[in-house]
Amino acid sequence: TLQQWRKGLERRLLAQSVEALKAGDIQSGIIFIRQVLQRNPESIRATVMMAQLSEAMGSPATVLWYERLSELQPRDVKQ
Image (cartoon, one colour):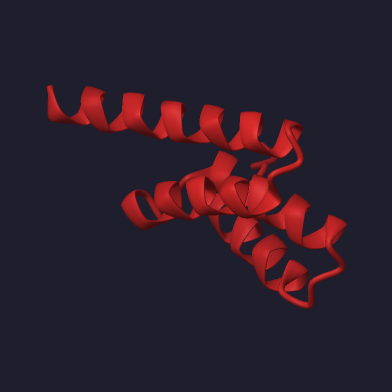
């Protein structure tokens, strides 16, 4: 189905990002993550990766990425 194809594409793009980052190619790693976020703005994994990269690079956008992550992650519900 189309949804399965999209999920597979997201996994491949994130895997390519990880490989690029491991090789020290930060720019390509960010491009792959941004491609995921363009297709799926609610991707928690891609948002986590952007938050961590921003933090590692000392970017002022770090706070925004972590705020976005807090919006996406389900809250713990105490019963």
